[in-house]
Length: 411
Ligand code: CAP
Ligand code: MG
Image (cartoon, rainbow, N blue to C red):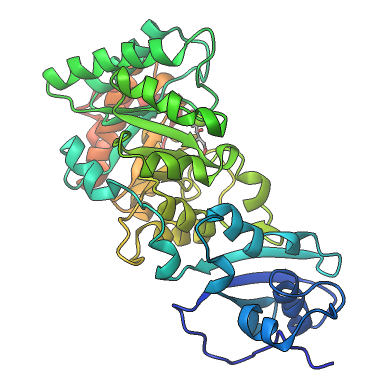
């Protein structure tokens, strides 16, 4: 039987198709493996339905336009994503759905996607993005520098807010809740936001513009209520763990005119499907979706310098996915975080460039002289790296940095 899903070499109209690249591991010939994906995710199944007419296939069938080595490129007609309802859940059910479970494919990894404007224009994109965040923080060209309040959980609101104040006095531009903190009894959202907002006001008066991202990841039907409580108490930024919340959680906050503040997007749980090079979904795919639904900042890793598993080429690809031209959608600022300390800054910034939000939790709170000194050391290291001054040299006249390097060394 002619394999209808193969259209090798066909040039697809990029505005007429959502195009996906998959890396495939299978005993099948690569073309067949590709057509299994196209078949399963559009008009087919394991055997040909007698009800599948030529017309249905022609209109709604996906096409395999490239199948070489272990890579296939599949185009899904935009009509497969039409209608008022469906959103990102429906996009993912097509491009990242049953195919991962097909017995005939021992491994599949969705490597990249190209989403046509007719789809992206249904989504809000970032309100602020890189330029908007820089404007809020009066930080025209250097990296944004942030901390994550540590310990991850346990500090009551007053001590939590004191941490933020100390970090701001140390020169940081950003701070955030950790990804597991939301509204626990020991640090309820309302009390935390109120206490932090008071400190941010004080920092502002003292010439340290700073924003703090409050984590409101919660059940879908509650997220706008949580946002209301945070905003009523002065929240300047909100945070969502996009993979435990769902992309729609980010989207609803980005779309709701009553929210209006920047959205920091954390990627907790991503390792479950991004880490295996032969099966899952790549971070660049996640980046394009987070940007489309409205994330102003999004974690992409530490370019091989921090504590988390890293694939540097994929992290550079992620950065590109967040910042390259994409149907006029604001660029999302890449967040580099996880196991970082001042000693990492020259190597990190040489790879990330300056359009990045660098964060350190332990690398600030673990400084022998406390949070303010830790924040100061991180700020000093970023300044030195920005000006191309070796850290050892800069540390001679900057005590906080010297002590950080003595404590953690440097790359
Ligand atoms: C970093 C962090 C972040 C990681 C997540 C943590 O703390 O708060 O969640 O950055 O990793 O809980 O580990 P430290 P990624 O600075 O103390 O490591 O950014 O790779 O998603
Ligand atoms: Mg964390």
